Length: 271
Picture (cartoon, rainbow, N blue to C red):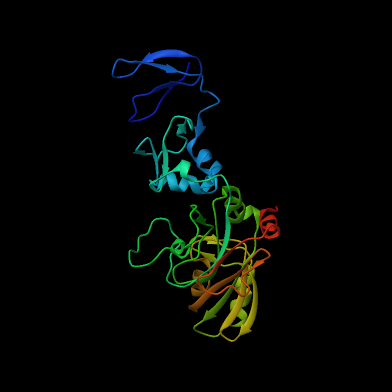
């Protein structure tokens, strides 16, 4: 019989079997048959639409998740959804509705997408969602100094499909640079560039002006395009995302957002 102990709680759980055990106060605690009831914390969070499992693992490691009032950072922790009180970012998980919301926003520069607001002077992109009561989360990265198309949702499956490189969802950016983008620079982008120990996948690049290009990538590493431009001896002045897969920013004004259509959601969810 395998014993499961949840840290900082006066509960002893057996993975299987119906038994009676005393807790620390001397009271008998009936342990139900919970082999099938206990679930991994990251799986439970993803099922509630917080984010993909991998992203939920990051949230756990970053100390954003509490179980019964205690911060849990150990991956693989199992919980009982029926009895445990689970919080994410100081909000009880029950408050996250099962109904999924899919939004596209035209993020202005100056707004950050990180849930952990390290820059206290900068507003969160979710501050722009004035009439959205449900909790939604940004999909992927779009740094403070960048603008354009950003998706927000509470559907963990969609988040996973858009962020995991194996699904190869294209993301298009309009990049304005300080110096002329030469033919040699474009060739290097198209072949892949080694930055910080990894080689980027080949990008699709089209020159729009001497200092403006369209760049399409399938990855989403932190500040990837800025690092690629810097690697070839140039600097980014403006960076705007205009497309994710077949979803385009269109005429959506800065700071505005809208719900995605069923067809747009289906396209993003497709393999």
